[in-house]
Amino acid sequence: MKNLLWIFGLLLLLTSCGSDDDICLGEESTPRLKLKFRNASNNLLTTVDTLYVDVDYGKTPLTSIIYSANVDSVFVPLRIDESPYTDIYFRTRSGQTGSKLRVTYDKKSIYVSPACGFKINYENLKPELTGTTPVQDIQTNNTTLTDENSINFYLRF
Image (tube, rainbow, N blue to C red):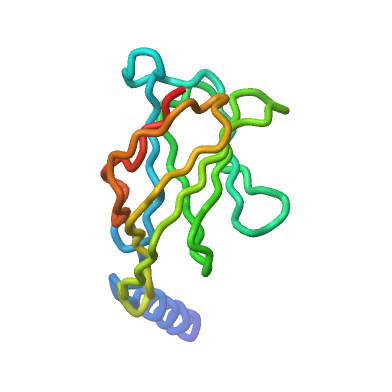
């Protein structure tokens, strides 16, 4: 019985040893692109009734980020490989061709900690829209991406 208590105590001691640096949260991770939606006719913030968002991360098929109803914004992770751009596809209906948004950028690696490693910040964000259905236009709001607090682009539907 004493041996069992010693083993239990040793296990408890080993599992409780760790530092606060073992967990990477919030500002310590690579931020995602923040997109909000506006009505194309009156430029007011709006909600899209159905939205499909796919991203090209250099693999086939495209990665589906979201399929949801009543969406007013979306966070999109950008590519972290050597590519200088990320292609994002928006549809409001299944089977629709949709709009393609190519976001080009400069990447900057930032060292965070031994446990978290590096995160990537994006600078000089530039949008290029191909296909005006369903996204009709883009308004640039913030051209740097260092956190997820500010809106980078407004998509006009």
